[in-house]
Amino acid sequence: QVELEESGGGSVQAGGSLRLSCTASNYAHPSYCMAWFRQVLGKEREEVATIDAAGSASHADSVKGRFTISQDNTTNTLSLQMNSLKPEDTAMYYCAVASGAFRCVPGLRYGSWGQGTQVTVSS
Image 1 (tube, one colour):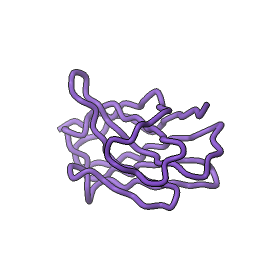
Image 2 (cartoon, helix red, strand yellow):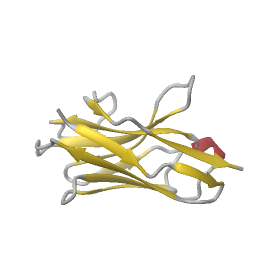
Image 3 (cartoon, rainbow, N blue to C red):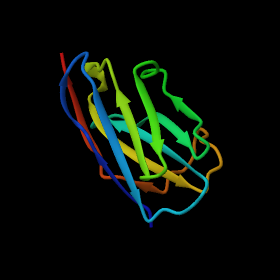
């Protein structure tokens, strides 16, 4: 069972930056899709960014140009660099992994999730 643990959330003023990290343990599959999601209480979960084992990354239009997903395979760490933060970026952020996936595609089922880390952006 893959275990994911997020860190790096916090409170920041609009225009500021945060870097989220997600460390994966007990993971050995060579193919996967890893993703960052966010959710505001009472609203639908939103896919923020994805990256596959080959390093192909994708970002939601709402964060494109401001957020960057990356991975470090030597430390099994997924990161999300968030710049130019806006109040509407306030949410709980989760990392997730779909083991065995060759590509990140819409509707992909993610089998493992972290506990989440809160990001709050004030105006």
